[in-house]
Structures are given as structure tokens and as C-alpha cells.
Amino acid sequence: MSEEMKMSPEEMEKRLKMVESACICKGCPSYTALGKEDDYIAYCFPTRGESKNISDEKGCICGTCPVYAEMDFITAYYCTRSIEMKQKEAIAEALWKGHSVWDHLKRRR
Image 1 (cartoon, helix red, strand yellow):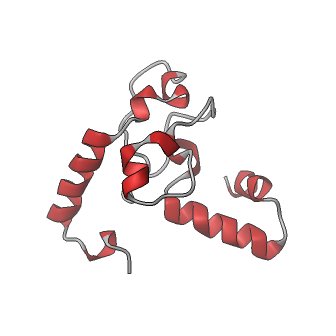
Image 2 (cartoon, helix red, strand yellow):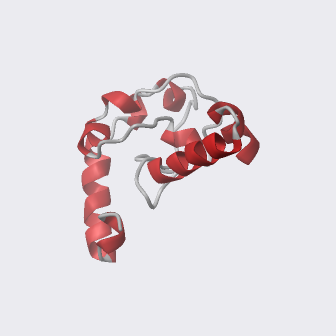
Image 3 (cartoon, rainbow, N blue to C red):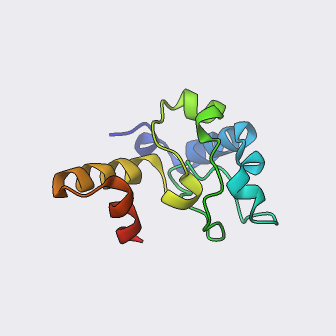
């Protein structure tokens, strides 16, 4: 069970505030291409996921984020492709079905 699954709602909220304070989403080319503030940031956080507004991938800086390093993430584009766990599930499913991962992710939208 993941660390987040063991947390109380209060602990999750505290963790979210910490993640938001370290988050660099607002400096990302995909975020700035939106041209306005999004409803939220920290798309990598388990209770957040992809943006309701960002649809075009204009570049990604997830790999340079302190949250990314702290959480040992390996995927990216959380604003358009969802949280780490869902991306890993999609990668595993694509590999199992013999699809290219990118084509598989596009089909699941």
C-alpha cells in the first residue's frame, strides 16, 4: 500500500500543501501555454491528476521539480497524462498488449 493510502484526510491535506509549495508547474511551457491560471497545480499529487484545462503538451519540466525527485517519479506530463500510478498502469498495459506506450495512452483518452 502506498504511503498516501495510509494517510488520514488531514495528513493528505498537509502533504498537498507541502507539495504545492514546492511545485514548479506554473513555470512549465505546457502550463504557460494555457494563457491563464489553471484550477489547481501539483498535478502529480494522487488526489489531483491531470488538468481540466491543459490539453496541449508544449514541453515538460516535471523532471526538474523537487517533488519529482523526492517522490522518485519516473513519468512526466502529469498535467495531461495523469498521476504516476495511472501512467505506470498504462505503460504496463501497453507492454502487455504489445502496443507502443504513446499510442496506447492516446487511445485511453
